[in-house]
Image 1 (cartoon, one colour):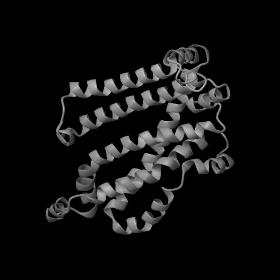
Image 2 (spheres, one colour):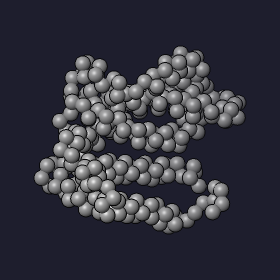
Image 3 (cartoon, rainbow, N blue to C red):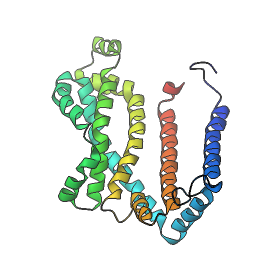
Image 4 (tube, rainbow, N blue to C red):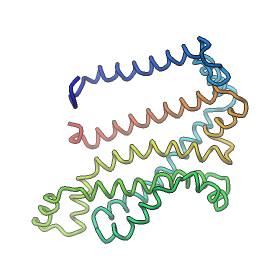
Length: 257
């Protein structure tokens, strides 16, 4: 191994899978070997059996679908607001000076702290859950996009003005194309954060979703079901992350060359 030296894709896959194999082996040894009580941590086989029961008897697929819908809905709403505002803040310093103090303040506010107010304002329906994800994602996304756009190479902007471009043309033909790969990468990262917020939203006042299943399983000490729900979230997140990466590589191949 050498610093920053790339490795073949095949080796990357083998190393990544190896960690999961070792993790499951350690988990199985700890639980099946009697080192950890199954009341506190179910073994892998019990977890799989409980998961199959959730899927076949208790309609867990509907819970998964509801959680995915909430994540996508809240994330899309955040992106619709954050990307244009972040681009405007990065491109125009007066807009940045106006919004940046509030956005910097708001991004430190935990989304979970808003849940009692959101229940009061929007009830226990889907709007409340979408707003939790929106609040948890939008302010970070705004600042990250603004920083990316604000760090655009000045020589590209000056070249555009030299060639006769107007202000709006600089934004549309220089700032956006130059930063599109970085913005896409920001969206990929924030999507992972959205998954953490949806579970928080579903733990309170929810009758459906993976978070609801987890909190119900806690009252029954069904640790196998809890672990299965957590693993499902991780698998969906991993799949969406790889899908985002593949899309970014297809849209912006020069960035990954």
